[in-house]
Each structure stands twice: as C-alpha cells, then as structure tokens.
Length: 425
Image (tube, rainbow, N blue to C red; front, top):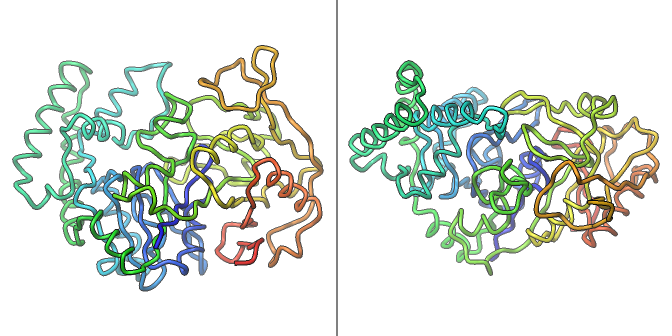
C-alpha cells in the first residue's frame, strides 16, 4: 500500500482543504505532514463554512483516522479554538484525531519572538503571519524545542527553562517589551495544552506504517505551497518547513518508496499573500477583478491576496520537484468574465527568454505571455465535464500539453459539489 500525497503547487491558498475533503472517501487515513497554523484550509459543505488551521481536512467525514504528523508545529491556543469551533457543528473529534508525540509545540514566547524579529527587520520584513512558526522551527533545528510528548513528561520544568531563555533573548537582543503580552497569553496556552492532552498521542511513524502494512489507504495533506518551501521556494520569502512531496517522508516517517500518487493543486490563476517576488502579479483593475471574483483574502490573516495570471514556468518547476502525477485546477469560475486570459510561458531575464525557474526572482524577471480566449460562461452550475465550454477545454488542454500531465479535476466553486472529475477513475 502506498501513501498518496496532495499538495499545493503555487504560493499556497490553492484550495487544498476542499480537495482533501472531496477525496477523503477513497482513504481510511488523512495525515498532515508539515507547517503550522498559518495554513488555513477552507471547507464548505451543507451550508457550513469551516476553516481548519492544524487539523487535517478529512475530519468531517465519518470513520476516518486523522493524524497530525511529527513535521507539524502546534499552537495549543489555536488548536483549542479550532476544536471548540468544530464541536459547535456537532462533530466529536476525540475518537478519530491522533497527534504525533514528536510534533513540536509553539510556545507563547515563540509568538513574541516572531513579532520582535519582524518588527526589527523594518523594510526587509518577510510578511510573517506572526504565529510563532519560524521561531518554533528554529528551536527544533537548534535542538531546543518542546514536543507534544513532553506534555506528559516533566513538562513544567522543561517549559520554565525554555521560556527563561526566550525572555533573555527578548530582553537583551531584541530589547522588546514582552511581559504583558506573555501574561495575557500563558493562561490560554495552558488551557489549550489541557485540551491537546485529551487526544491520543502516538508514535506516528510506527502508527502510519502499521496502517499501510494492513492495507489502509493514506492521503498525506500538505500545507502552504511549493513556492514557499524553505529550500526550493522564493527564498527568503518562504515558510519554515519543506512543503514539497519529500516533506511527507520526513514529516510522517515514510520511506520514499511508500509514496504513490502525487496530486498537485493549482489555481487557474496565481495569488500570493505577504511579501516576496511574484512575476505575473497584476497591479491594475484586472488584478482587482480577480481578487473580488475569487474572494481572495487570507483565511488565516484576512489580508488581501496579490493576484496575477497563471505562471507555467513556476508550475513546471513545482511539478518537477514533487513528481506530480495528476493536476487539479481550482477556481476556474473566477475567470468566467474575461474576454481573453493570459498565461505566462517564459521569463525574460536580461533580454533572454528562459523557461526555467531561476535562482532568484527579482525585478529583472519579466513574464512572457500567450493569450487564450476566455469562456464568458458561468461555470458554477456545471455538473459534468461534458458541459464545459470549448474555451475552457482549450485552456485545460494547453496546460496539460505544457506540463505533460493530465488535469484530473477542475473546481468551479467552493462547495464540495462544485468539483468536476475530468478523467475516468
């Protein structure tokens, strides 16, 4: 039995949560393998809209095992809020949500260090969500982090020692006033930690491999997007974990040969939140039109997303890094009203046109476009691929030919039912 992997191919916000929810009936297990609560996976079903930040997106399907893997970093405050929100919908998670003992904890002072660090960078700030994720991964790599398993093993002493070191850093390096913020935060943090302890802690690497050995199909759910990968993204404007397919191996304890299908999700256009390069970004009314039609505001931060045309240079790069076997195109309906649609097929760098993703994206990188006719059709009520307008079929075919990979699903709206399967199972 193999683990299928589902991940984003752009700068995040591609719609991974919805597709995990749609595909979950095929699987017994859904597992998150990296990232923190800066991820916001939005699900819409039965007139309910729910944003998940830490919990896997298979949680609303019955009789499914959901695992938060060792590669994830967890903020107990946000985790508790998420649990409380889901309980209001009548869903009890205690029986089907499992948490890796090796997942690292975001401490209250990690958030404060994140704020202090971003403030100190001034104009060079990277646009952090200020959730404390980067500082948590720094402590993890520096071998100073606290893990979920520590909550049941002499935790108070470990916590006090780590917080003391953070206080020294805030006082003597950042010179940041933290005392009131910490006082406001700690009570909620320990309440969240108690909620966390009410769930089953597991050695997730053994747990998942045992499930595979018993022929239980597993779907690994990525967060953020490929172009935010700490190694291969648009550094330094990236997240702090490996968002690519290889991250599923280290974030869950899987051998490489355990990976099966790789579902790569992309929007029919591009968006980006926060700072960093974005070659196809639109600064005119077209960008505003895409943002308004797509409701492009961060599900975690509420920040307006930067919008632009689809970038096939970056998409091809993401496909290569992840070994994508099937493409899934989201939010095709957002482009319903355009007479013509542009797609970037190359970059002009210093007068030369290239089709590869360079070491660094900067202002000298200019997109080279082709234009395709728009479909000028409301896609949101479409129920099958046979109803697609020919212009949309041409758009999809062009992408498939450029990527040499099939598009197996096209989404035409936010709801579960607005998901069109293009290929036979």
